[in-house]
Every structure is written in C-alpha cells, then in structure tokens.
Image 1 (cartoon, rainbow, N blue to C red):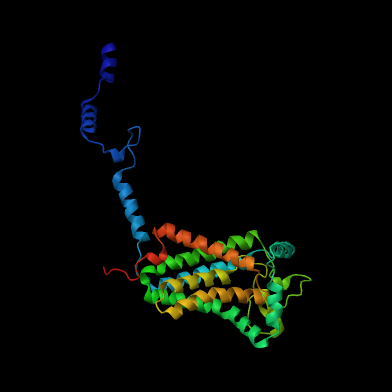
Image 2: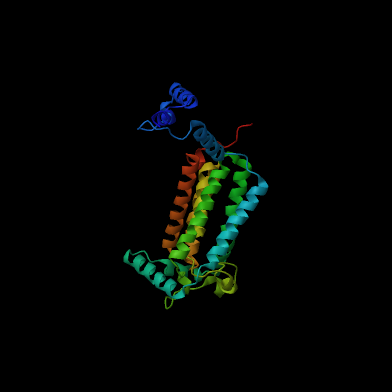
Length: 298
C-alpha cells in the first residue's frame, strides 16, 4: 500500500513539463498586480482599448444615421416629457416657491416684463412666434451647419445636445413646475391665448397635447445657449459671432416676457447643458470645439 500511495503522489512527467514551462515563461510586470498575481491578459486589454479608441475617434457623420438619431432622441424626449404625471397641485406650489425665492433676491421681474410687452402688440406677437419657431429652426440649422462645415466636431457637439435634452427629463419628473402664466392670482398674461398666435405647445389650443407643468428646466434656454456658444466659437464672421452671443439673451427675455418661464428655469437649462458638455468632454477627452474641423482622409 505504501508503494502505491507514493506512486499516486509522485508528479507525472506531463505535470513536470508544464511546471518547467511556466517557470521558463517570463511574466511582464504589466501582467501582474502588486502581489505578483497575473492580471487580465495584455492582448485583451489592448483590444478593449483599441475598440474604445475607435468609438471615440471622430468619424464622418452619415446623413441617414444622423436624421434617425435626432428624430429618435427628440421623439423619446417628447414622449417621456408628456408622459410625466401632470401634478397640478405640486406644480403650482413649486411655482409659488420659485416666485418667493426670486422675490427674496429682489429679482422677481417676470410679471413687470410680461405686462410691459403686452402693451405693444407687434412686439408681443413677434415674441410668440419667436418662442414657437426659432427653438427648432435655429437648433436644426446649427446641426446642419456643423454636419456640412464642421464634420470633425459634429459628433461631439451633437452628443452634448443629446445628453442635455435627455438630462432635462430628470427635472420634469422630480420638480413639476407651473409656468408663470398658470399661477393663480398673479395676473400674468398668457400672450399666446390672448393674441391667438403660435407659441408654447403648452398654451392655447395645444395645451391638451403637451405637459403644461414641465417648465423646469427650460430647454428653450438650454438649446439656445448650446447654439449660441457653438456659433460664437466656431463661426468666422464677427457679425455671426455676435448674433450667436445675442441669441440666448433674446431667448431668455422672450421666455419671461411671454410668461412661459421664470429666469430660474433658464438656470436649470444651463445646468443641463453643462452636464451635456461634461459628458462629451469625458467621452472624447477634450472640448468638442478643440477637435479638428475636418477629418483626415483615410
């Protein structure tokens, strides 16, 4: 029995050969951790890194994909935004809180601005159409311009806009807010209803197809600041840069004058935009505007 037991414990020739081979095969420091144990194989890490590098590298945008992506993001955003429960009671309470906070700062000027423009018909009507159209026209126009003239930067700048838009949904869910025109006893003028013009999707005859209590954050401001920065940084003519800088300022005035938003909603829009640019920076490793304008030929 002793001899048999010894033979069972004795290493076999194949095991001896594998042991010697393992000892002869050098292990690079990169493949071991602090305790000398093997890490994940270097080729696997290199393959993963190469895949991430390819995904992060700016590539020529494809028209069909971009149209589909923009449509999908906006459709999803609209569906979710309008699916948020319309918590009227809570939304009105939050509006009162916002107004009280602004009053404590001495910056509750939306009502005065609203009443001032209401006395100038051509101005308030123009603002209604501005609110109802430029929000889409300018944003899409900047996207098309980037696609055609700045293909190397297009994906990174578009990513910032997409993340900004999706992140805004957090605000709509967590902080339902009534716009000033729906506040009770505050004497705000709903300029779209009074003048029967195009304007807010949540006002007038379109109120039943859009969530009226999704005012925080303001994507009118979030998108306009995105467009304004992009134009001011990347456009070459000085007058175009100036228009880019003025666009978000005018948008801020319009959203308050038409009683669709508080200025605090604009702050929320800028916060969402900052998050969008941060995600874009983290993904591409640099500012979207520092990427090359043109893509290198393959």
